[in-house]
Length: 325
Image 1 (spheres, rainbow, N blue to C red):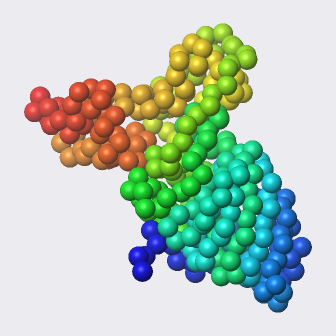
Image 2 (image 1 turned 120 degrees about the vertical axis):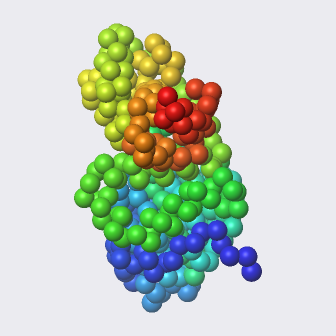
Image 3 (image 1 turned 30 degrees about the horizontal axis):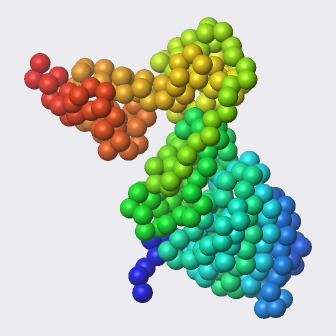
């Protein structure tokens, strides 16, 4: 049998135990507090079994596992303002996402977006691995206000391998989770990494709405100045909007009208510019990877590609030329 690409040990999640319950109503209410109200219909094998949930939240993203202890029908209705990825650690589920029927198993999962209906039947031995990503997290790190993802998560896609690997690292490192819960900066960086890796690996498209309100360019300039000054810090859209003194949505609308780019695209450009400055003035022992990390790039390959696209040479070429000069 081909091993599942999801190499997460269920026991590693036990330290994040949220509840255990043999009462179906209690289990439903507990799950609803971290996801949303829904209906559970136990199968004939459920009585006497324990439902359980492991759950940990980091900023606007959370992960964990869920098992019903027996066959269970689930009817969640339309999701609220979050995306929910459901993968299988064991067992399977026959589900419907927005009216599209599919199977959750060892080779594939699903991602459900806001305002998308979800329901299905989970096998008695099904242990779900869940990742909840608030809509705000997608907005903060990609600039997309309305994003639709392909609901089928094909775990064999090479593009998803970095995301799956990062999930494995995170779930197997309680020290990292504890640090992120103490330090918001770390939590934001982990959230940003997971969001961007998911978007890099899972097909999606955006549906941008027409701006309904516009501010004076002064607000945009204030935001741009803040971005340039703080580009290498773990910025979110909320940080930039606060500095500009406007709501996030208004900031996005203003940037679309006056700059035709999102604030997060400008952050990326500012980071690339800053990295070039640092490479040109680097010490003899400086390394490209260290400079990339200091400028907020956690993926060296993407950094090198973006750098070459803008400056026509690799970061290592810039560093080498600076040392020779």
